Image (cartoon, rainbow, N blue to C red):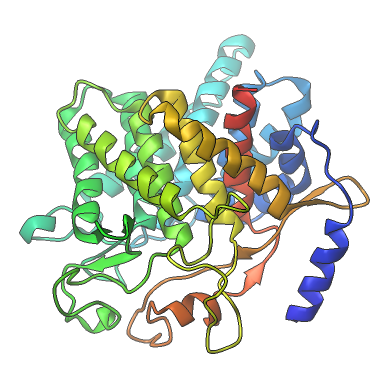
Length: 415
């Protein structure tokens, strides 16, 4: 299988990509319909959200009509006419993230309702309100200690917070407040607390990176992977690229909409700059992109014979976050070179074109996580992130497509 994959990638790489390509639209056109045909899931929602960003940036011109149709269809398959969900599964913060598509749909459909005398927008507001109320008032949280109030990553991971979860939950929460209750300072404090907790427990000052996951109760059977001693009590073992990608992207997304007058705003700016500094340090100097395991290069070889590799989803997320952080003014100008090199590195390292003109994004990690107890192979080791049964290398993965579209949009704004 690995030989077939490499052969396909090498064939596609022989077809050049144009420097004049508008990559946000071309990647949307290449894969948007495929990923939005699927059910309510954070990956499909990520692509749908990216499509809506392209629509908004293009003022909903004719070139994006299909993108809007695909994204709207994605949401419409998940909710009823009254805005209730058809089959929402509780206990998993990932299932909140797709709700980010509802805000843009509500705004645009409201405009269309005013123009056409229809009443189609309200269902998206109802659905977004349901997710917000569930997350804020019902979702499982760490009950005590210095992490009190932190959202569980999932109910099957009790008292665990993963970097991924900040993009899934806190960023949705922030977008809801921005749209419907911007002056709710207690809500903004709750959001900021999620970042402050996980950064306090997972940030390694020496490596300038965040460990992928942290367990408030490292002795729980589902936290068998957690460090049992200080320093970094409760932390997982490695710095996983996409985990930090979710975290970095969530920070800039929240800071874009958070009131700057809030007392925790500057705390999140400080965290964002610490993350940016660390990732700049570990950026591959030759390619401009990043490795699957951030603290190693390709000289690290796993027991199964797979070397550490340059990874497209994390690299796209980092590029997006640098570019957006610069645009909204929370990152200093010194990171412009990092961001520019990263975006050019994405194109050179990962993007290929097929004979029919569609694009590919190659070399993504399919999935990764730690635990639970019934999955002892998901132990958070370096070998797991390279050899794990759910961690195979794939191409045209939604978790790379969505961030690449968003990174491209940010890059195109300044060009």
